[in-house]
Image (cartoon, rainbow, N blue to C red; front, side, top):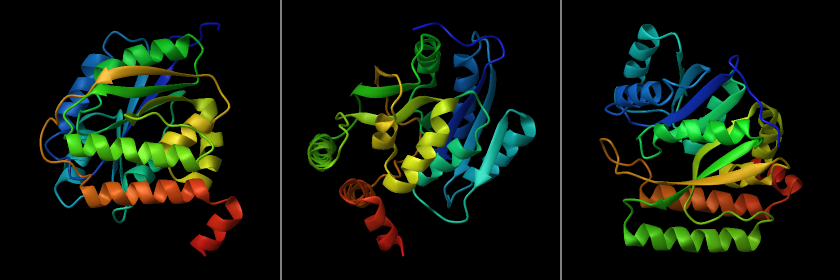
Length: 240
């Protein structure tokens, strides 16, 4: 694979935000520090997914202080996956990195992701080695992936995350997949491009409490499994 990229590279970092007011300034600071030695232009796209705290107020303050920060506010809570896809659709970069705003996806790994992209990979997935999850969540996650992989045409490994890099060439194709599938972890793996996987240790949340309660996790799992079992015609009928 031939190396690619140069000093003209623009990187978009996209984060879905739901009640992450205490994390946002630290997120921006750590992204800045992580990319200090990387030859690229950067934008940070923060998508507020109907937060009920002051998250969007902080986003507005960050935008006013730094022109590299862009804020998007959804009219209501659409869900983590929809917020990420909104940010991806609005991103301007040659390369897009998606991550969670709670800093459990450490921005310090972005340079290694860019190195993999420069080596020729179009998608770089990040998978957790470990983290601060309860044994119940680990067991439920393993059960979900076993079920999803049994009914889907693409395999998704346990401990997969929405921390990933996408080349600009993937975005248009991913948009078509998203309208049909609605589960980004599987949609990205379905792309017929060069892909690789790196691993990381997930730290505890920087502050606050997680938005993914067990009911929300069950809802995401149900939507992902349903999407995997429906064809395009069935999904159009369901939405109608």
